[in-house]
Length: 297
Picture (cartoon, one colour):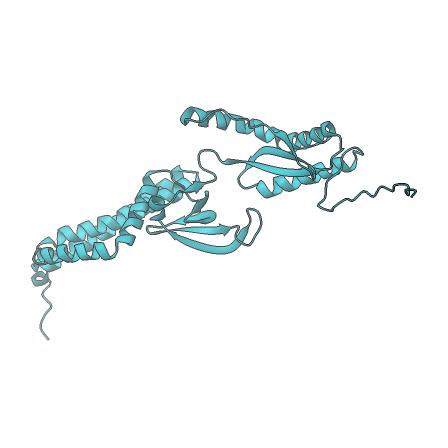
């Protein structure tokens, strides 16, 4: 059996390049682990840590590809032209993939949305639970479920939609929403009492919260061309032949729309039950019959 000559193998340029590539990849992986650990310790915000970890992982993959291309550059020289022609065809065939990857770069560099935001993307509304290189994963809201409640479905939307359709973000610079509820009141009821009941309910449920929102809204008006708007509760009235409609407008957190509206309705209905001069209108038709004396012929 011939003796194994290690020096002969080490003199082979291909073996040397292979060892350099293996050592370089190992160094990149170690550096990625150290950087990820340092970022995790220095950033308490979960969404920031998530975005930075994605960037570090992508850069490490790119570094591995570049390392191999540099180490084995002379072996790749003969197929450069062929790869260029094939690359043009592949780019055209996979243009949706390319646009989706470009969308991921835009999401990384620009604050369209981040993990944890509530968005409507490609006609799908949900909370962002993951942002990949090609797709954004949403936990769906709405559809057959009334209110902003989860359906239980996980939806993956191509990142290319950030260039094709509007992106509705419920929780970006201003993580609050204006919401309204309508209360029909019978004609003949005490309008002042009805308005007082609804405004008091809105002030009790959302008043303190609205005062906290005011500072965020002031920051929005300084950053964007937005006219000042009222963030404290307000009540407006419209009327038709059926009833008077009082509309309560208020500000709430994007995650608390359903619970806030429920609390307001409970508070308003309880207060109206104690007020004899205010009554909730219904869709039932009321017919008043008036008797007339019989005519004498």
